[in-house]
Image (cartoon, rainbow over all chains, first blue to last red; front, side, top):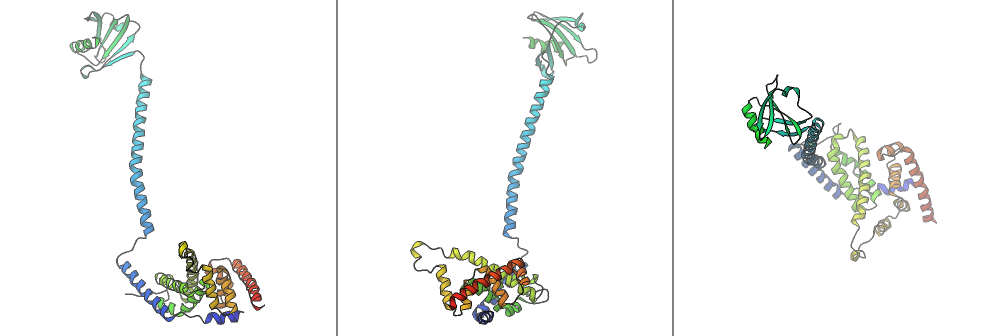
Length: 172
Length: 171
């Protein structure tokens, strides 16, 4: 059986035409390879397509990520500010004024603090306002009563005239 | 243009001159018809040009050629089904794959050749390499990327099938 198989198979030979055609194809391939080598190393299509996909992904992901994180940090900052405000919010603060860019704060009070006893009294819109200056900073502070409630005013103003003008507008 | 060579200075042309028949016979044994074997033959040697510098010597080239021929034949079988998908109107005029093989078998007068051609592809390559190329089981295993035990069992089964087929033919 083996001999018969060998005898039969050994009768198979490559047709001369095919051999010549293949040799020509090989030469052509060799020429193509030489041209490619001369033109520089060719990057395989698969590598190129993967690199392009990665680049597109980066182009999409980076701005999206930036948007996401900036939005998140913005909202985080807002949340923190709100939290701080909430934590530090004094229930007694009823109004924050920024008259002429110079802030003053009005708080409810139970009674007149000691520093206002003997303070200068100014009448504004029929309301008696006791004005004094902070011993350390010199900022003007005031105490007044309105509608049965007592209020303390702290300001960043040192000039009584300015204080009267700004606070007078606020009282109205 | 500088001709590419193996590590020991062999050119692709020297390799084709030496192994052309081997590759062609293996291709014929795998695809069982000449036109397909022609295609595989050409593809194998064009690939050789691209890889000749990776080869060390003639023996390495031989092993490479056998492996690539078997792979090309497998790939060719994959394509064969696509090649034979035709619209319904045309099917009567074109022979089916089985009819094509039968026609090829009719051309083989020798009963042994007929029987071998009826073996499944994986058995045919083992039989061809073992009985015609006279390679050892270890060499066949290395070239085909199979375990030695797999090659042994394939040869055993192929022999059993051949005995059965040749018994039927002789009776």
